[in-house]
Image (spheres, rainbow, N blue to C red):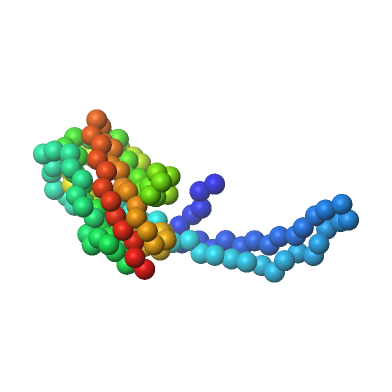
Amino acid sequence: LKLDYFSSYFWRVRGHNSTGYSDWSNFWSFETEEEGYVEDLNTQSDSYYLNDNVPNPFVNTTSIEFGVPKSCFVSLNIYNEIGILVSKVISENLNSGTYRAVLSANDFVNGVYYYRLQAGNYSAMKKLVVVK
């Protein structure tokens, strides 16, 4: 299930067992924010590359610049310390160029993460640190 960005979601629950149903709980809610975004810097790239995120460590937001020299399928994913995928920043075809991904610390708990860029036959991984 993928939730929409900038949306409010509400829920309530009730229990059920052999003796019947409980009353419904109070309503609970949360609002989603943007997970991050990728912007085209409108410059050409002669090679594949993945820069260190800036700033690192970060408190609010961080930027990751990367380049692709030709149109191809690109994925930028974030993994936790034990290698579990925690965020798909981008997963789509991009034209040749230089791009910047902007991540929000709101989407992560404190800790060490790894981000991996895959573009064509190129793959690179770097470390980022979230400190709130």
